[in-house]
Every structure is written in structure tokens, then in C-alpha cells.
Image (cartoon, rainbow, N blue to C red; front, side, top):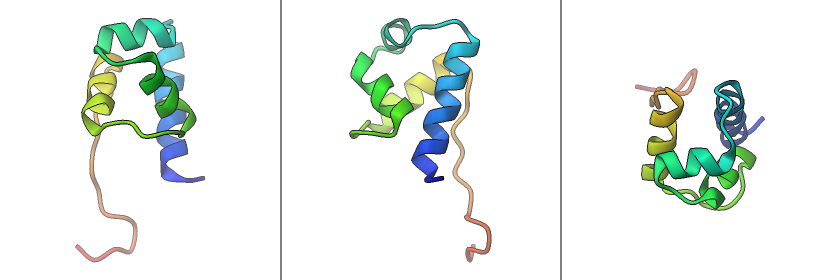
Length: 72
């Protein structure tokens, strides 16, 4: 599974767990509904700042880590 799809699924699952609609999440994060939808479906282009804002509302943290086997 591509990384963007895995991230999108995690965001969607958390949104649903919290009982939020895409529209409400977008309003709370100050982003467009399209950004939430594009992130969850792994389509389109979403600004990193928007992803971070959405993550904060969902109580998620974004981390950067080396890929297994990658040189540090």
C-alpha cells in the first residue's frame, strides 16, 4: 500500500472514531473540505500545512522517520 494511502486511511479512521464529518473537520482545521477529502482518498495535492492542521484537530502527530534499511 502506498504511504499516502496508509496516511489517508489513518486520518479517515480517526475522524470517524471522533464522530466528525469531513465538513466539520475542515471547518475546525481551517481548511477546505476538498483538502480533507483529498487527504483521506490519497488524491489531489494537499499542502503540508493543511495536513498538520488536520492532524492537530484529530489528535494525531506527524513524524518523519527513516525508511527501514535506509542510511541515516
